[in-house]
Image (cartoon, rainbow, N blue to C red; front, side, top):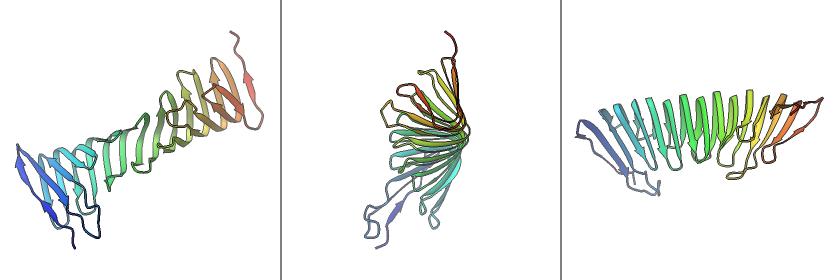
Length: 244
């Protein structure tokens, strides 16, 4: 049995609204979830499923609501695009960017001053590609992963926000204000147990860590933020102690 859709367009207070929902079928036992699109200007092609929207755009599907200035959404392919001060709010997460492309309400490709927050984990960057189901994200350009006051930066970062693990490359820094630690390297791997104070950073390539004026340099370093310890992992190392 084909999916049955009821599509209604109504002019309400100067804004056009399209609520879309579907009945479950054997091919889609769960059915399509609710979708609501509102905008100041809206055109909809019922055959292609594409809605063109402009002005105070709001797209709500399942637990997520996106807002922006202009864009489009295809109800058949569950794909959309918004630009102009885009924001998205969902369960335990939010995102802001200049423009966002979304697919199946879970794959978000955001560009321009991106800020994404999931629980106490935050991602920043020029371009962020993030999957809300897997928690996997890729940051390209001015990347930053923040967990509490533990901050990892790099030009390219890949991260799993559910279990908190990340790899950073290019102008990498690791810092913690509460521990007064600052470190740099060519690349780094950072892991932490959610809701635990057990962050560990593995720094590789020209690794350098500074705490309270003391400096440790080595080809590779392991920093444990839980006890403020640093360990060299190979090669010639240099330790500089600053007199108190």
